[in-house]
Length: 147
Ligand SMILES: [Zn+2]
Image 1 (tube, rainbow, N blue to C red):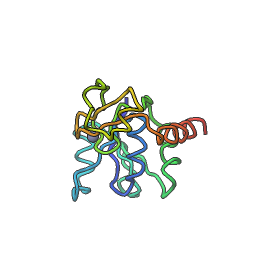
Image 2: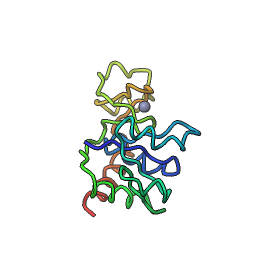
Image 3: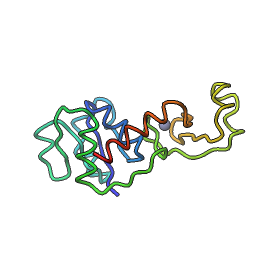
Image 4: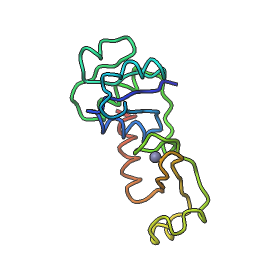
C-alpha cells in the first residue's frame, strides 16, 4: 500500500485522498525543503507541482488541475486501497467507529438523533457521520473512480 506526502500547495488533493482512506500526509509547516527527507524516512511518495522535486524517483509530478484529476492520476499509477471513512480529512489520522453513546453531547443534537453510526479520529478527535454532505462526497468519489 502506497503512502503519500503531499505538497502543501495541493491541500484539496490531500483532503480528497484522505476521504478515500488513503494515507496522505503533509510536511510540517515551513519544512517543504525537507519533503524528500521525510518521504525517504517514512517511505512515502511525494505528490508535488515542483518540477525538480517531481522528477525524483519516489515522486509524482502533477499539474495545476482540479484535485479530481490529480487523484485519478495517483490512483492509476499507484497501488492504493479505497476505504472511505477510515482516515481523517483534517489531520490524516485513523478514523475508527465509535459507539453512539460516546458522541452524545459531542455532536449537534439533531445530528445525534438522525444518525446511528459515528466515527472518531484518533488523531484530532474529530467526529464523522454520514450527514447530508456524505452523499455528495460519495458521488464525487464514485465519479473519480469511474472516470
Ligand atoms: Zn483528525
